[in-house]
Length: 129
Image (tube, one colour):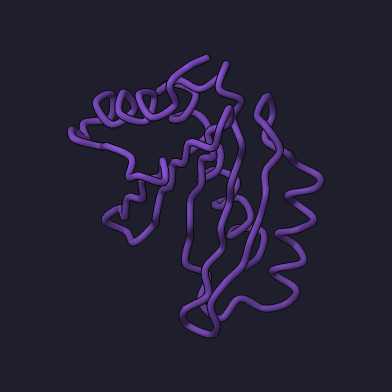
């Protein structure tokens, strides 16, 4: 079985983020310049890949659309997309996550998963305006 902590470190090196080491819980969180957050977490034989996007003052209809899109347009060739919502008003955030089996986890697949999540979010945002 792959060492998922090592896969996370390899992803950091491949993306120019040297010294990307998971904490004792097997997780690492990165905040990008635009405020988006990326999370990688080793959980036994699964790597959880997540992104958090700001969705200030999202309406119920927009959130319903997000749930419908997640159900109808799962990421092609990727594990199921999971959604979570937290915060209120201007502080609302949308969490997107996918679980990668250890056997499929490598820096390229992590990058593809993150790009697919970002594209999903941009499509949802365009459809919600």
